[in-house]
Length: 404
Image 1 (cartoon, rainbow, N blue to C red):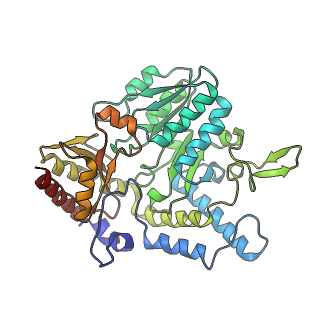
Image 2: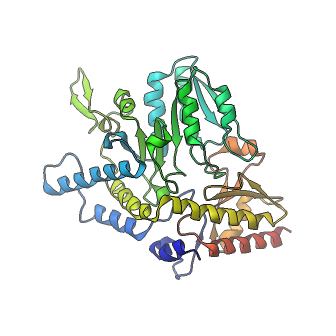
Image 3: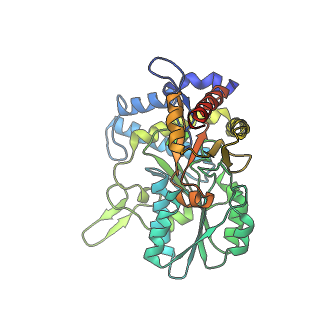
Protein backbone atom coordinates (compact mmCIF):
# COMPACT_ATOMS: atom_id res chain seq x y z
CA UNK A 1 0.00 0.00 0.00
CA UNK A 2 1.34 3.42 -0.92
CA UNK A 3 2.05 5.81 1.93
CA UNK A 4 -0.60 8.26 0.75
CA UNK A 5 -3.40 5.72 0.67
CA UNK A 6 -2.19 3.94 3.81
CA UNK A 7 -2.31 7.12 5.84
CA UNK A 8 -5.71 8.28 4.71
CA UNK A 9 -7.84 5.36 3.53
CA UNK A 10 -9.50 5.18 6.96
CA UNK A 11 -10.68 8.78 6.51
CA UNK A 12 -13.19 7.53 3.91
CA UNK A 13 -16.00 5.50 5.49
CA UNK A 14 -17.40 4.60 2.06
CA UNK A 15 -14.37 2.44 1.29
CA UNK A 16 -15.53 -0.31 3.66
CA UNK A 17 -18.43 -2.73 3.65
CA UNK A 18 -20.91 -2.82 6.56
CA UNK A 19 -18.85 -5.72 7.89
CA UNK A 20 -15.71 -3.58 7.88
CA UNK A 21 -14.09 -5.29 4.89
CA UNK A 22 -12.27 -3.21 2.26
CA UNK A 23 -14.25 -2.24 -0.83
CA UNK A 24 -12.09 -1.71 -3.90
CA UNK A 25 -13.50 1.49 -5.35
CA UNK A 26 -12.15 2.21 -8.84
CA UNK A 27 -14.79 4.65 -10.04
CA UNK A 28 -13.38 7.92 -8.74
CA UNK A 29 -13.60 9.56 -12.19
CA UNK A 30 -17.37 9.28 -11.90
CA UNK A 31 -17.53 10.54 -8.31
CA UNK A 32 -15.05 10.50 -5.46
CA UNK A 33 -15.66 8.98 -2.06
CA UNK A 34 -16.03 11.56 0.72
CA UNK A 35 -13.64 11.98 3.64
CA UNK A 36 -15.04 12.22 7.15
CA UNK A 37 -14.02 15.89 7.31
CA UNK A 38 -16.38 16.71 4.43
CA UNK A 39 -19.21 14.61 5.84
CA UNK A 40 -18.86 16.29 9.23
CA UNK A 41 -18.69 19.79 7.73
CA UNK A 42 -21.86 19.21 5.76
CA UNK A 43 -23.65 17.72 8.77
CA UNK A 44 -22.76 20.77 10.89
CA UNK A 45 -23.83 23.14 8.14
CA UNK A 46 -27.13 21.32 7.79
CA UNK A 47 -27.60 21.09 11.55
CA UNK A 48 -26.47 23.39 14.32
CA UNK A 49 -24.98 26.02 11.96
CA UNK A 50 -27.81 26.10 9.44
CA UNK A 51 -29.45 29.32 8.29
CA UNK A 52 -30.05 31.02 4.97
CA UNK A 53 -27.43 33.34 3.49
CA UNK A 54 -27.30 36.91 2.19
CA UNK A 55 -30.77 37.83 3.47
CA UNK A 56 -31.15 37.35 7.21
CA UNK A 57 -30.33 40.11 9.69
CA UNK A 58 -29.99 37.66 12.58
CA UNK A 59 -26.61 36.47 13.81
CA UNK A 60 -26.65 32.91 12.52
CA UNK A 61 -27.58 34.03 9.02
CA UNK A 62 -24.69 36.49 9.11
CA UNK A 63 -22.31 33.74 10.25
CA UNK A 64 -23.47 31.39 7.51
CA UNK A 65 -23.12 34.17 4.93
CA UNK A 66 -19.53 34.72 6.05
CA UNK A 67 -18.85 30.99 5.76
CA UNK A 68 -20.45 30.86 2.30
CA UNK A 69 -18.37 33.75 1.02
CA UNK A 70 -15.25 32.36 2.70
CA UNK A 71 -15.74 29.29 0.52
CA UNK A 72 -15.72 31.53 -2.55
CA UNK A 73 -12.40 32.98 -1.39
CA UNK A 74 -11.05 29.47 -0.75
CA UNK A 75 -12.00 28.30 -4.23
CA UNK A 76 -10.41 31.39 -5.77
CA UNK A 77 -7.16 30.66 -3.95
CA UNK A 78 -7.29 26.95 -4.85
CA UNK A 79 -7.47 27.62 -8.59
CA UNK A 80 -5.35 30.76 -8.64
CA UNK A 81 -8.14 33.13 -9.62
CA UNK A 82 -7.44 36.83 -9.75
CA UNK A 83 -10.49 37.77 -7.69
CA UNK A 84 -13.34 36.27 -5.70
CA UNK A 85 -15.61 38.01 -8.23
CA UNK A 86 -14.46 35.49 -10.85
CA UNK A 87 -16.01 32.56 -8.94
CA UNK A 88 -19.61 31.60 -9.70
CA UNK A 89 -21.16 28.78 -7.69
CA UNK A 90 -23.27 26.52 -9.91
CA UNK A 91 -24.97 23.19 -9.30
CA UNK A 92 -22.34 21.27 -11.24
CA UNK A 93 -19.99 21.59 -14.20
CA UNK A 94 -22.87 20.82 -16.53
CA UNK A 95 -24.72 23.89 -15.31
CA UNK A 96 -21.54 25.95 -15.62
CA UNK A 97 -21.08 25.03 -19.29
CA UNK A 98 -24.77 25.66 -20.00
CA UNK A 99 -24.45 29.06 -18.33
CA UNK A 100 -21.54 30.05 -20.58
CA UNK A 101 -23.19 28.64 -23.71
CA UNK A 102 -26.53 30.34 -23.12
CA UNK A 103 -25.28 33.63 -21.63
CA UNK A 104 -21.96 34.32 -23.37
CA UNK A 105 -22.81 32.24 -26.43
CA UNK A 106 -26.31 33.62 -26.81
CA UNK A 107 -24.94 37.15 -26.64
CA UNK A 108 -21.88 36.70 -28.87
CA UNK A 109 -22.59 33.98 -31.44
CA UNK A 110 -24.32 34.71 -34.73
CA UNK A 111 -24.97 32.89 -38.03
CA UNK A 112 -21.72 31.81 -39.64
CA UNK A 113 -19.70 31.82 -36.42
CA UNK A 114 -17.97 28.57 -35.49
CA UNK A 115 -17.57 26.58 -32.28
CA UNK A 116 -14.63 24.18 -31.88
CA UNK A 117 -15.01 21.03 -29.78
CA UNK A 118 -13.06 17.74 -29.82
CA UNK A 119 -13.88 14.08 -30.37
CA UNK A 120 -13.33 13.14 -26.72
CA UNK A 121 -15.69 15.63 -25.09
CA UNK A 122 -18.19 14.65 -22.41
CA UNK A 123 -21.81 15.13 -23.44
CA UNK A 124 -22.01 18.11 -21.08
CA UNK A 125 -19.44 19.88 -23.30
CA UNK A 126 -21.24 18.94 -26.52
CA UNK A 127 -25.00 19.24 -26.03
CA UNK A 128 -25.07 22.81 -24.60
CA UNK A 129 -23.09 24.02 -27.63
CA UNK A 130 -25.41 22.18 -30.00
CA UNK A 131 -28.37 23.88 -28.34
CA UNK A 132 -26.89 27.36 -28.65
CA UNK A 133 -25.68 26.66 -32.19
CA UNK A 134 -29.23 25.76 -33.21
CA UNK A 135 -30.52 28.98 -31.67
CA UNK A 136 -27.84 31.31 -33.05
CA UNK A 137 -26.97 29.75 -36.41
CA UNK A 138 -23.39 29.00 -35.38
CA UNK A 139 -21.62 25.90 -36.70
CA UNK A 140 -19.76 23.24 -34.69
CA UNK A 141 -16.39 21.85 -35.78
CA UNK A 142 -14.72 18.84 -34.17
CA UNK A 143 -10.99 18.50 -33.53
CA UNK A 144 -9.69 14.94 -34.08
CA UNK A 145 -7.40 12.97 -31.79
CA UNK A 146 -3.84 11.78 -32.15
CA UNK A 147 -3.22 8.07 -32.49
CA UNK A 148 -2.72 7.71 -28.73
CA UNK A 149 -5.93 9.54 -27.81
CA UNK A 150 -4.92 13.14 -27.21
CA UNK A 151 -6.58 16.22 -28.65
CA UNK A 152 -4.61 16.93 -31.83
CA UNK A 153 -3.24 20.41 -31.23
CA UNK A 154 -1.37 20.42 -34.55
CA UNK A 155 -4.72 20.03 -36.31
CA UNK A 156 -6.32 22.59 -34.02
CA UNK A 157 -3.70 25.22 -34.80
CA UNK A 158 -3.98 24.55 -38.54
CA UNK A 159 -7.78 24.67 -38.66
CA UNK A 160 -8.82 27.45 -36.29
CA UNK A 161 -9.96 30.57 -38.11
CA UNK A 162 -11.29 34.01 -37.26
CA UNK A 163 -14.79 32.53 -37.65
CA UNK A 164 -14.19 30.52 -34.47
CA UNK A 165 -15.50 32.42 -31.46
CA UNK A 166 -15.26 29.74 -28.76
CA UNK A 167 -13.10 26.65 -28.28
CA UNK A 168 -14.39 24.23 -25.60
CA UNK A 169 -12.15 21.32 -24.60
CA UNK A 170 -11.63 18.84 -21.78
CA UNK A 171 -8.56 19.56 -19.68
CA UNK A 172 -8.41 15.82 -18.90
CA UNK A 173 -10.45 13.19 -20.73
CA UNK A 174 -12.89 11.32 -18.49
CA UNK A 175 -12.47 8.19 -20.65
CA UNK A 176 -8.83 8.16 -21.76
CA UNK A 177 -7.15 10.17 -19.01
CA UNK A 178 -5.26 12.14 -21.65
CA UNK A 179 -4.13 15.60 -20.56
CA UNK A 180 -4.60 18.60 -22.83
CA UNK A 181 -1.74 20.98 -23.52
CA UNK A 182 -3.92 23.77 -22.20
CA UNK A 183 -1.48 26.66 -22.67
CA UNK A 184 -0.94 25.71 -26.30
CA UNK A 185 -4.69 25.42 -26.85
CA UNK A 186 -5.19 28.86 -25.30
CA UNK A 187 -2.51 30.39 -27.51
CA UNK A 188 -4.11 28.87 -30.61
CA UNK A 189 -7.59 30.06 -29.66
CA UNK A 190 -6.49 33.57 -28.77
CA UNK A 191 -4.45 33.88 -31.98
CA UNK A 192 -7.72 33.92 -33.95
CA UNK A 193 -9.64 35.95 -31.37
CA UNK A 194 -11.56 33.00 -29.91
CA UNK A 195 -12.30 32.34 -26.24
CA UNK A 196 -11.25 29.07 -24.57
CA UNK A 197 -13.42 27.11 -22.14
CA UNK A 198 -11.84 24.18 -20.28
CA UNK A 199 -13.84 21.36 -18.72
CA UNK A 200 -11.78 20.73 -15.60
CA UNK A 201 -13.87 18.02 -13.93
CA UNK A 202 -11.07 15.44 -14.10
CA UNK A 203 -8.24 17.94 -13.69
CA UNK A 204 -9.31 19.83 -10.57
CA UNK A 205 -9.09 16.77 -8.26
CA UNK A 206 -5.57 15.84 -9.35
CA UNK A 207 -3.72 18.80 -10.86
CA UNK A 208 -2.46 22.13 -9.60
CA UNK A 209 -4.51 24.86 -11.22
CA UNK A 210 -3.51 28.45 -11.89
CA UNK A 211 -5.87 30.36 -14.14
CA UNK A 212 -3.27 32.92 -15.19
CA UNK A 213 -0.89 30.15 -16.29
CA UNK A 214 -3.58 28.22 -18.17
CA UNK A 215 -4.60 31.46 -19.90
CA UNK A 216 -8.12 30.17 -20.58
CA UNK A 217 -11.23 32.36 -20.45
CA UNK A 218 -13.69 29.99 -18.74
CA UNK A 219 -13.03 27.00 -16.46
CA UNK A 220 -15.58 24.65 -14.90
CA UNK A 221 -15.39 21.77 -12.42
CA UNK A 222 -17.66 19.78 -10.12
CA UNK A 223 -17.42 19.44 -6.35
CA UNK A 224 -18.28 15.76 -6.14
CA UNK A 225 -15.23 14.66 -8.13
CA UNK A 226 -13.06 16.78 -5.80
CA UNK A 227 -14.04 14.71 -2.73
CA UNK A 228 -16.87 17.15 -2.02
CA UNK A 229 -20.64 16.81 -2.27
CA UNK A 230 -22.87 16.53 -5.30
CA UNK A 231 -25.01 19.50 -6.30
CA UNK A 232 -22.24 22.10 -6.36
CA UNK A 233 -19.72 23.16 -8.96
CA UNK A 234 -17.66 26.15 -9.96
CA UNK A 235 -17.53 28.35 -13.01
CA UNK A 236 -14.46 30.56 -13.19
CA UNK A 237 -14.37 33.28 -15.82
CA UNK A 238 -12.34 36.38 -16.43
CA UNK A 239 -14.02 39.16 -14.48
CA UNK A 240 -14.46 41.41 -17.49
CA UNK A 241 -16.27 38.62 -19.34
CA UNK A 242 -18.62 37.92 -16.43
CA UNK A 243 -19.46 41.59 -16.02
CA UNK A 244 -20.39 41.82 -19.72
CA UNK A 245 -22.53 38.64 -19.75
CA UNK A 246 -26.30 38.82 -19.24
CA UNK A 247 -27.98 36.70 -16.54
CA UNK A 248 -28.94 33.18 -17.49
CA UNK A 249 -31.64 32.61 -14.86
CA UNK A 250 -33.85 35.15 -13.14
CA UNK A 251 -35.10 35.22 -9.55
CA UNK A 252 -34.11 36.29 -6.10
CA UNK A 253 -30.56 37.24 -5.10
CA UNK A 254 -29.43 38.17 -8.62
CA UNK A 255 -31.21 41.53 -8.83
CA UNK A 256 -30.49 45.14 -8.04
CA UNK A 257 -34.01 46.56 -8.36
CA UNK A 258 -37.24 44.99 -9.64
CA UNK A 259 -40.32 46.79 -10.94
CA UNK A 260 -42.91 45.57 -13.38
CA UNK A 261 -41.51 48.02 -15.89
CA UNK A 262 -37.84 47.10 -15.59
CA UNK A 263 -35.37 44.99 -13.62
CA UNK A 264 -31.73 45.81 -13.08
CA UNK A 265 -29.23 43.16 -12.09
CA UNK A 266 -26.56 42.68 -9.45
CA UNK A 267 -22.94 42.63 -10.59
CA UNK A 268 -21.18 39.34 -11.25
CA UNK A 269 -20.93 36.82 -9.73
CA UNK A 270 -24.22 37.40 -7.89
CA UNK A 271 -26.18 37.94 -11.11
CA UNK A 272 -25.49 34.30 -12.01
CA UNK A 273 -26.57 32.84 -8.66
CA UNK A 274 -30.35 33.17 -8.80
CA UNK A 275 -32.40 31.77 -5.93
CA UNK A 276 -31.37 30.27 -2.63
CA UNK A 277 -27.94 28.78 -3.26
CA UNK A 278 -26.58 25.35 -2.38
CA UNK A 279 -25.54 26.53 1.07
CA UNK A 280 -24.44 23.33 2.77
CA UNK A 281 -22.79 21.99 -0.38
CA UNK A 282 -20.64 25.10 -0.75
CA UNK A 283 -19.55 24.83 2.89
CA UNK A 284 -18.65 21.17 2.32
CA UNK A 285 -16.73 22.03 -0.85
CA UNK A 286 -14.59 24.37 1.25
CA UNK A 287 -13.88 21.45 3.59
CA UNK A 288 -13.02 19.19 0.64
CA UNK A 289 -10.43 21.65 -0.67
CA UNK A 290 -8.98 22.03 2.83
CA UNK A 291 -8.67 18.24 2.99
CA UNK A 292 -7.16 17.66 -0.44
CA UNK A 293 -4.81 20.55 -1.09
CA UNK A 294 -2.28 19.84 1.71
CA UNK A 295 -1.37 16.54 0.02
CA UNK A 296 0.07 18.56 -2.85
CA UNK A 297 -1.73 18.36 -6.18
CA UNK A 298 1.47 17.34 -7.97
CA UNK A 299 1.81 14.43 -5.52
CA UNK A 300 -1.78 13.36 -6.15
CA UNK A 301 -1.23 13.43 -9.90
CA UNK A 302 1.93 11.36 -9.58
CA UNK A 303 0.23 8.87 -7.23
CA UNK A 304 -2.77 8.27 -9.47
CA UNK A 305 -0.76 8.27 -12.70
CA UNK A 306 1.58 5.63 -11.29
CA UNK A 307 -1.35 3.39 -10.39
CA UNK A 308 -2.82 3.87 -13.86
CA UNK A 309 0.52 2.89 -15.43
CA UNK A 310 0.68 -0.24 -13.26
CA UNK A 311 -2.89 -1.10 -14.23
CA UNK A 312 -2.09 -0.75 -17.92
CA UNK A 313 0.96 -3.01 -17.56
CA UNK A 314 -1.09 -5.67 -15.78
CA UNK A 315 -4.03 -5.49 -18.18
CA UNK A 316 -1.68 -5.65 -21.17
CA UNK A 317 -0.69 -9.16 -20.08
CA UNK A 318 -4.24 -10.33 -20.88
CA UNK A 319 -4.17 -10.96 -24.62
CA UNK A 320 -7.92 -10.47 -25.06
CA UNK A 321 -7.84 -6.93 -23.63
CA UNK A 322 -7.60 -3.80 -25.75
CA UNK A 323 -6.38 -0.68 -23.97
CA UNK A 324 -7.38 2.84 -24.97
CA UNK A 325 -5.65 6.17 -24.50
CA UNK A 326 -2.05 7.25 -23.91
CA UNK A 327 0.47 5.34 -21.87
CA UNK A 328 0.75 8.25 -19.45
CA UNK A 329 -2.71 9.15 -18.20
CA UNK A 330 -4.19 11.08 -15.30
CA UNK A 331 -5.33 8.17 -13.16
CA UNK A 332 -7.85 6.72 -15.65
CA UNK A 333 -7.63 3.48 -17.65
CA UNK A 334 -10.27 2.36 -20.16
CA UNK A 335 -10.28 -1.05 -21.78
CA UNK A 336 -12.38 -3.61 -23.62
CA UNK A 337 -12.19 -7.39 -23.50
CA UNK A 338 -12.79 -9.39 -26.67
CA UNK A 339 -16.13 -11.21 -26.59
CA UNK A 340 -17.23 -9.72 -23.24
CA UNK A 341 -19.51 -6.74 -22.85
CA UNK A 342 -18.16 -4.15 -20.38
CA UNK A 343 -21.36 -4.46 -18.35
CA UNK A 344 -20.58 -8.14 -17.79
CA UNK A 345 -17.04 -7.24 -16.72
CA UNK A 346 -18.44 -4.69 -14.27
CA UNK A 347 -20.99 -7.12 -12.85
CA UNK A 348 -18.46 -9.88 -12.25
CA UNK A 349 -15.99 -7.46 -10.70
CA UNK A 350 -18.72 -6.20 -8.39
CA UNK A 351 -19.19 -9.75 -7.13
CA UNK A 352 -15.48 -9.68 -6.26
CA UNK A 353 -15.82 -6.42 -4.31
CA UNK A 354 -14.40 -4.24 -7.08
CA UNK A 355 -16.29 -1.21 -8.42
CA UNK A 356 -15.48 0.04 -11.93
CA UNK A 357 -17.51 1.99 -14.47
CA UNK A 358 -18.85 0.26 -17.59
CA UNK A 359 -20.62 2.08 -20.39
CA UNK A 360 -20.14 4.96 -22.81
CA UNK A 361 -19.20 7.37 -19.99
CA UNK A 362 -21.33 10.17 -21.49
CA UNK A 363 -18.93 10.22 -24.43
CA UNK A 364 -20.77 8.43 -27.25
CA UNK A 365 -18.93 10.26 -30.08
CA UNK A 366 -15.66 9.03 -28.58
CA UNK A 367 -17.02 5.46 -28.42
CA UNK A 368 -17.90 5.73 -32.12
CA UNK A 369 -14.36 6.92 -32.80
CA UNK A 370 -12.90 3.98 -30.85
CA UNK A 371 -15.20 1.53 -32.65
CA UNK A 372 -16.80 0.13 -29.49
CA UNK A 373 -20.23 0.61 -27.90
CA UNK A 374 -18.73 0.97 -24.42
CA UNK A 375 -15.59 0.45 -22.36
CA UNK A 376 -14.73 -0.71 -18.89
CA UNK A 377 -13.00 2.04 -16.91
CA UNK A 378 -10.89 1.87 -13.76
CA UNK A 379 -10.09 5.22 -12.18
CA UNK A 380 -8.02 6.03 -9.13
CA UNK A 381 -8.11 8.49 -6.24
CA UNK A 382 -5.86 9.51 -3.38
CA UNK A 383 -7.14 6.51 -1.39
CA UNK A 384 -6.33 3.94 -4.12
CA UNK A 385 -3.43 1.51 -3.72
CA UNK A 386 -1.88 -1.68 -5.02
CA UNK A 387 -4.44 -3.82 -3.20
CA UNK A 388 -7.09 -2.32 -5.48
CA UNK A 389 -5.03 -3.27 -8.52
CA UNK A 390 -4.59 -6.80 -7.23
CA UNK A 391 -8.34 -7.12 -6.65
CA UNK A 392 -9.02 -5.77 -10.14
CA UNK A 393 -6.77 -8.38 -11.73
CA UNK A 394 -8.28 -11.20 -9.64
CA UNK A 395 -11.65 -10.13 -10.98
CA UNK A 396 -10.36 -10.01 -14.55
CA UNK A 397 -9.02 -13.56 -14.15
CA UNK A 398 -12.48 -14.64 -13.08
CA UNK A 399 -14.00 -12.95 -16.15
CA UNK A 400 -11.53 -14.91 -18.29
CA UNK A 401 -12.51 -18.19 -16.64
CA UNK A 402 -16.23 -17.53 -17.17
CA UNK A 403 -15.97 -16.38 -20.76
CA UNK A 404 -12.87 -18.31 -21.79
